[in-house]
Amino acid sequence: MFDAFSFIIIAFALIIFLMIFRRLFGHVKANPSVYIIHFRNGKPVRQGAGLSFFYFAPNASLVSIPLETIDIPFMFQEVSQDFQEVTVQGQVTYRISEPVVLAGMMNFTLGPDRKAYLSEDPQKLSARVVTVVQVQVRNALQTMPLQDLLRRSSELEISVRDAVGQAATFKTLGISLVDLSILAVKPNPDTGRALEANAREQILKQADDAVYVRRNAAIEQERAVKENELNTEIAIETKKRQIRDTQLEAERAELERRQEIEDQALTGKINLEERNRELTVLRLENARKEADAKAYAISTTMAVFKDVDPKVLQALTIGQAKSSTLIAQAFNGLAEGADRIGELNISPALLRSLLEDQED
Image 1: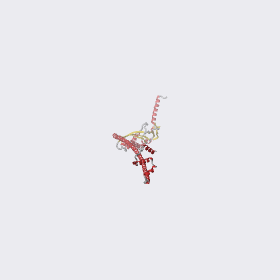
Image 2: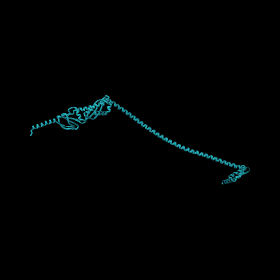
Image 3: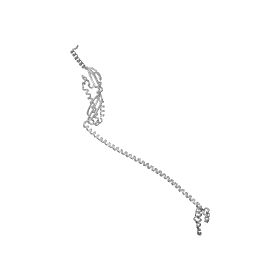
Image 4: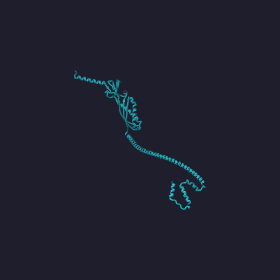
């Protein structure tokens, strides 16, 4: 059986042993984003990301290099091409792509407590990255005037990103650029106020120009509307004139047709009158010839009876004469011998009887 003193002695010896063991032996367990290089007597015996192992401390050195991306904000005051002070604000993101190369260029050895680095090189790495960025920003600013920088900050960002990504320092240290952003490019306050005033004037001028353009557009639109109205009226008047011309043409054609009909009718009448005249002339000629023939016949007949006593002729014609003719001859004879007639009575009944006989 152990007494209390023996137990204390054993416990104390165990503690001393553990302390000596911890000083002589150590254990490291790295995250997957940490690259560990285990040196023994100055020679690397194992290396890799996320290692976990025991090591003998008196002859071991551990190098711990982070592999995750690192963000570093920056803000520089530089001078543009036209010698204007400019403040550039942004952020650079990088990562260690070749940890073995970096381990040969900078000291990333862990201290005895395995929690802190033996040197300040890990902090200096970020400063070197910022220095590279500042140099490239300065080079880019010296190629552009202030107003171009303010208007074309995206071009500045692209130029600086390409230059930093190809920087010799990054290749030498085994690091690579992940991203670089230019968040702001600002002039000094006095220059900024001057630019704001100029920009304000430009904005006011643009506003005035916009008002002028709107007015001109309104005037132009009104002119176009009036022009369309005039064109419409002209088209209407032209259509009316065409209609009137068509109507006049139709009336003229109708008049010509009527005139042609009247001319044809007149020509027909003239032809008819001409034929009537010819017919009349022909009739007159025929009548004249007939009259000449009758006159010739009468003259021939009269020539035959020229030497005959009229009373003989009357007697010859009594048989062919009408009763009225005979009565007339009788009264004519009475009239010729009136000096020898004492009294002659002709009663109405006798006269009526003679007339009735004439009617019969």
